Length: 143
Image (cartoon, rainbow, N blue to C red; front, side, top):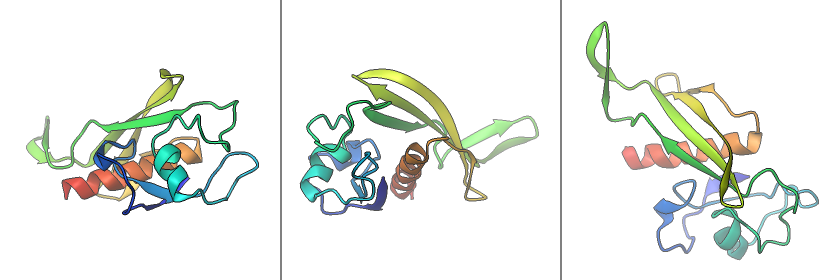
């Protein structure tokens, strides 16, 4: 469960990480809930997905990784029938949960930039927290 940005991680391309940056946090695996993974585990497993070498990862799990993308960049204009151009107000975040390198499920979340609130959230609090971290990274890059 990501909690704070990990500024001193060692990845060749941190922007390519699933959450668009490195994060530290606590484990949610059964038997290890709330424990803090080491820096090495954060870098080799937690921030990458597919943590097959992590002894804490449960064998029976819904997914191995979650990927996100944004379909409405914050710095573009959209058109509607009543106005020629207006700033994007709602970002759509697409997610894909993967298991064994194949999609398990996918969906769309929505965030209202003007209200700074989620319009459509994920039911799993872990995926929702990852979406929030991804959005934070995305907005910092676009600022």
